[in-house]
Image (cartoon, rainbow, N blue to C red; front, side):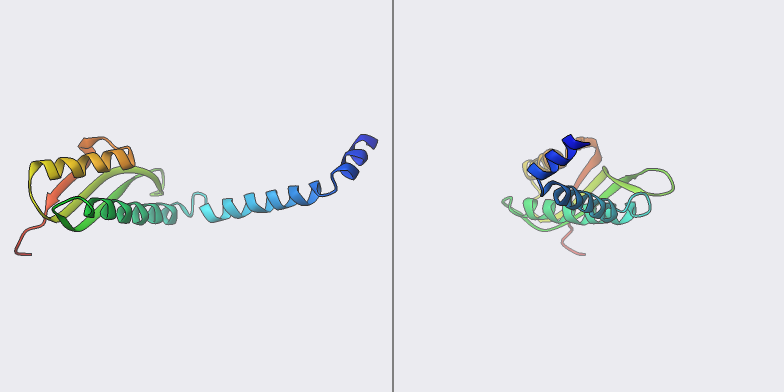
Length: 127
């Protein structure tokens, strides 16, 4: 017991630091939502990465007006987790095979998904 008192006298800020660390951990756990908040986590993941993929694809030559849809795996009771099930991307522009391959490679590298889970299409002229 005396060793603990000596230690705390030497480091008086330690109880406060531990309290702040525990509070931060509790805030992180409540923000992630657990099982009931899984849909929110999944949705924000989907939106964020769909936006990022669209921005990256839009920088490729001959690619404009990019739309991205990301679907996630379901895990028990319909709770979605951030594991990509599939991605669909459409764009307006050059329909060359190399452009589509570049987009496919970009998505596979950015989200670490297999190519068979990604579909890339060109938006029609008459929508």
